[in-house]
Amino acid sequence: MGTQERSEEQKLRQELTAYLRKLARWKNNDVVKLAFLEAEDAEQVDKLDLTGVAELKRNANGTFEARFVDKVRVLAMLRELMEEQRDGELEAFLDGLSRPEGGGEA
Image 1 (cartoon, rainbow, N blue to C red):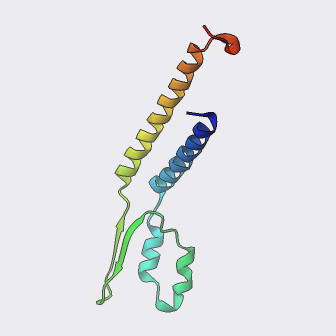
Image 2 (cartoon, rainbow, N blue to C red):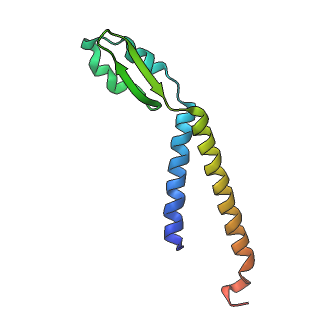
């Protein structure tokens, strides 16, 4: 894998890690606000943080249902990703050890 490919992959992993951390810290306060918004307050929806919402449903009888992202799965994914990053760091370290000084052949 080339240096540029590794750099791009590392950037994507960092973005994914940041997003998973955001999901893990997300609070559902804005969903409660959304449940009680009246039709005339619809412009406020754009200001709400609904990051961790998987599904929203308002039934004909006025009930409101919300399903959220599973934080346990998010944390497990975050842990896996961080372990992979550490393994990658270890791999790079070991690669560096196996290269002779000066970049020449051994």
